[in-house]
Image 1: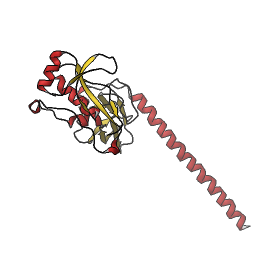
Image 2: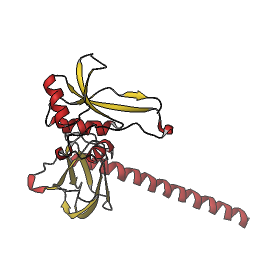
Image 3: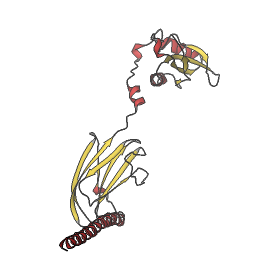
Length: 250
């Protein structure tokens, strides 16, 4: 008989525990829903200019802290590029944080969509409290831009008997592409480019439109060709990189 009473008591305790757990779980969901609702009700607050601080990400992360109360907003702004990654971390679970793109669209993804100035709005649904937020911005590296910066061209190094890259002697790297740097054809330009830059420059037909052009040089890297074209354009306008020529073997 005592055994039956013990089992019955255990079952009652189990039911009570499950009911308490269910209530706690529902309370967590209700609290989360309440915070979202409260943030939504408060995000119409005006943000004054004196409450906006510019963030200069000379380092990849910046820590900001302060005191905030219901009925006010604190703002931050920063400049970023499309593809940069922006994140934040905070222990202040009650505060609301909204991030707006340069087109004033609210964003949720860490990958930033546009070039320009972004705005962050921090506000509190109720009460007042101190906060601390770590912001981080990781710049998207543009490999092409980095490569262009590696090439330095100086007028004092010209004229040269030949410009551009030579065919690689290592047969294992073939096939390779040579990217030509061209300028529009004229006798004046041809003489100018031979006398002042590359003495082996020559006249040819453009692969795409068939027009006469002057090929100044050709390079194994498109980035290097673009850099050289920019350098030439400072003296002769409209230098450009033409269609590459594929070389199958040495």
